[in-house]
Length: 244
Image (cartoon, rainbow, N blue to C red; front, side, top):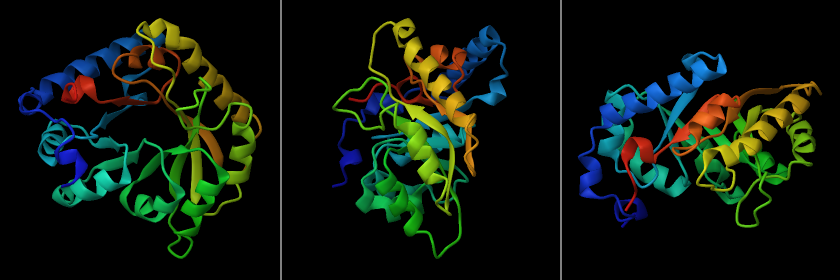
């Protein structure tokens, strides 16, 4: 049995009023934007649907969400057929192994977790005959955590330059998963540093590389991330409830 079917999605989770949860998240996004002098429409809400069965995803879609994020290629492949009628945008936010580049390219509209030239070259190669272009983000390991993927901050500019030579990828910005800290204010320096890195790379004007997107912030810290410039926030628990 596919893992997401038994990975802890609880019956009471399916009873959540998803529309109400989504409305509350949108209200929090709007409030954070007001504090930062930004517009809510400048922040894309991505619902992280890992371990969530197709039906609650469909309910979230019916409540107005259009962007969904998955952590694993295998899980996305298992649930996407039941959602093929939705005009949703799918984001891969988890670590991607290079041997899964082809299915990832087929399944996702965005990949947030490019962290090596080898992976990027694989993604480029599997689509070379198709001619389509894939927007990607470079994942940066700002916390220097051995258990997390991501390129080191002193190497990300070199990676962006290398990817500028690949024909089928479009580097659109950066992504970070900072260390988990209970107090969101303690995470602020990581979000601020990601924005600074994006500005540094943008100033180098690599061909075909833009730094317009900052994917940062999850359920417990997305408001701080928005205040620091996030353009994409990845929200799971606040929408679908806690995983079992």
